[in-house]
Amino acid sequence: MIKFKHTNRALTDVGIMLRKGLRQELIDQKHNATGRLSRGLKYHKKGTTLNIISSVSYWKAVNNPKFAKIPNLNAIKSWLNAKRRNGTLVEPKWGSNPSSILRRMNTSGYGNRNYNGSMRDPYHFYEEGNRLPRRTNFAGYVANKFSKDVAKKLAPSIGVDVANMIADKIRKNNPKTNVVEAF
Image 1 (tube, one colour):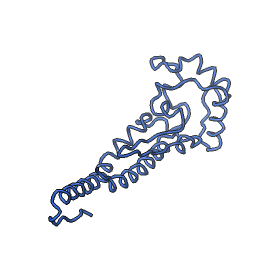
Image 2: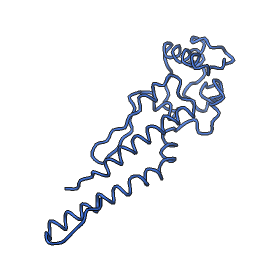
Image 3: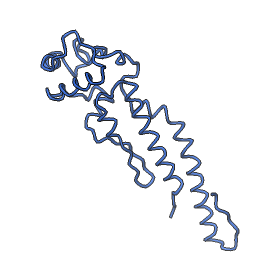
Image 4: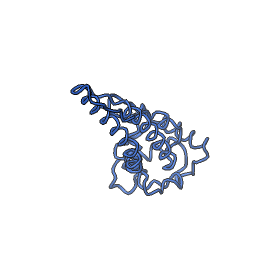
């Protein structure tokens, strides 16, 4: 049986690194109004598989606006309150009344990317940070950004575990051979 002792430690480090990178990217893309999505990001390691998960259901909409649904009035109110507390709310030209925002979402073709009146297109109604070229796909951006770092962390650990596995097999097959552990 292969023991991935070093690889599991490296996977934990990679999970921490990716979670930190995702949280920073949410801040950089100005997607951190309440911080709930950022706090909901977790990494889960099972065997040699690492998953980055979120307990927040709307992460898909933040990552890709095509998955967005029209929020209810209470969600709009809490979003506006969070933006006001952070001081990042720039008054849209139609006002910041939650009812008028919901009405505009319902009548502007929200969710239809080809409709020119959609609130989602363009993003710059709310704040200057919405004009970032990488406004969506925060998870993909972080995955690409950290791909070399992940490889640098995992490759040596996998190598050590494989070397130790080979040493165990050699010891098992030929007990008289002097085999040294990799680490």
